[in-house]
Image (cartoon, rainbow, N blue to C red; front, top):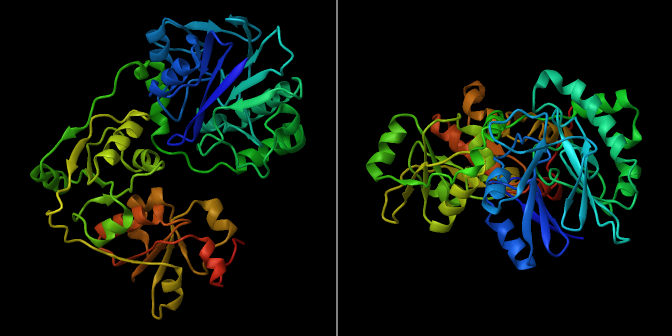
Length: 446
């Protein structure tokens, strides 16, 4: 048995391809199935089964499309309500993929009908692999508030029971989750690294160390905000939306960009945040292209609103369209900013050294998440998470706004939004670690 794990950094997830040298099972593929097909081709194996551990809440699944392209079985819980045919599987089912044996394990918690897949080669002595999806993760478990916040405690109790069930497997079993690599689906951040086995989790995972009720209270208390686009993912996946090719970007003219801004549409500038600060179209919003791009665009822009992307590098807009399609956003307008285009709007940038040297009044705005703020922040800083800036920016006190986050990325987004609202802004574009290096005073939440 061989396992190939593909990182999907723009989603904060992993996809797994497990095979016996001839036939392969793919677990939790994203919408873009090309890298998976390339991996299978390079390994010389045929994809004969595709599985989703659950109906995903954070991205559009590519499982149905991949299965249809290869004439493979699509495995999904028999209890899930979906609008397409699949092979419905239940707890205890044992299937074969070539010479591999696949055991289905009911692991409710992250979702109601979540399942894990234990795979082993019955003719080999090597340990099994557990593909746990959003159930047992490295050092934590998947969140239980994404299906319905009202069910978060009930599902957390189910998540505890599921983790305990998985912990009964051979300690040498390799643990291969989908979430927990930057996805908002993870219920926490691991405090230590392990060797990636069930046995290692017995020593560090709170779900396996705490009694049920203390674990549930701790887990639920640690949940952060949920990106707004998550509400759309399960309905899209139940409809099988990922089987269709996404609509491409639609080129728009400069006049159409102007009209979009005047109409109050979201016009997103993909260029570097320092380039944006030096000059941009008034009314546009800076979301520099990175692996975080789709998360923040999907979070900030109301679902189904019109969207235009501005760019100066073709590779950036191509990657942006790819990442947006992964969360179901298709066919936005795209406009290549000509170097001769007048970009009259600007705002100031500085680093933490410049922050320390400044003399005079200012309003410090911290746009990190609540847990980051609580762990340490500047005295007197106003906490306004980046995803709330567009809605609550008018609540900020008067004065020049000095905006920061952990790296400068989110602060760049927030600075552009506040600048559009008519505020005088200084973007503190620097690493939070520099605050300690420069002995800038901080405090912690009471």
